Image (cartoon, rainbow, N blue to C red):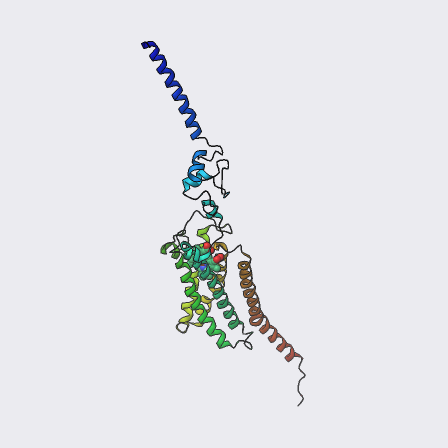
Length: 297
Ligand code: HEM
């Protein structure tokens, strides 16, 4: 074989070797289901089906699951499965305990404050003293107000530990200081909803402390200060409804309706018993005196 033949033979051998290799390589990277894994790897290494994009049918492709480090043969093991898995609750979700406690204590504060306002109206209307003696109603009103104050302090303190909201003390105590690019479940600005809660908290502080040292104030001044109770009540109802995650849930709506219904009813009773009834009685008395027959002798 002369040199020319040698060169031609070498070129031919190289050509066949290369084409065989390309064919071989192509077989190796063949990916029938286009999931990013070669058929060969699916069969030999991952034991997934090379004809099915998502072998375990959990919504995430086999190749993606390998990259995510989840199991492509287990439909419970994928990020999508984690996202759509049912809320495991406070004990299954240790990172969210602060949020759950914040919501629960907010609801507790709402119930306690509704009781405080209701007993206050029972005391001032004097209409139910046959059912609840005045002194008892007054003591319950005062005691539950302290409990409610404790519940509110606990309620907002939990959000200091919440990994999502990450509320600071200044944000909690200065109205409108908190700002987050966030709409609440009911579609309100999160910062405004929380600001109403902060103002209601200050209202509650003023009401509780001025009542504790009531004897050191003139009755008239105390009454004027105490009238902020109505604004405070409306603010905390607004706050809860606007900020709350549970505001869309039926039982929370029932709770808000019961609270508003009870307080509205008691305000109505108070107006009747303290304003309408005395005026009517005075009018009746004057009428009776006017029609009374003059006595003889
Ligand atoms: C009188 C005072 C307050 C009352 C009665 C109250 C009550 C409530 C209620 C009933 C909820 C709804 C809970 C739910 O839907 O699960 C709520 C939510 C909330 N409150 Fe308050 N709150 C008060 C003050 C505050 C203050 C001062 C702050 C913080 C500065 C605050 C921060 C929040 C936050 C961040 C939420 C939303 C929690 C969620 O995701 O549901 N609250 N509050």
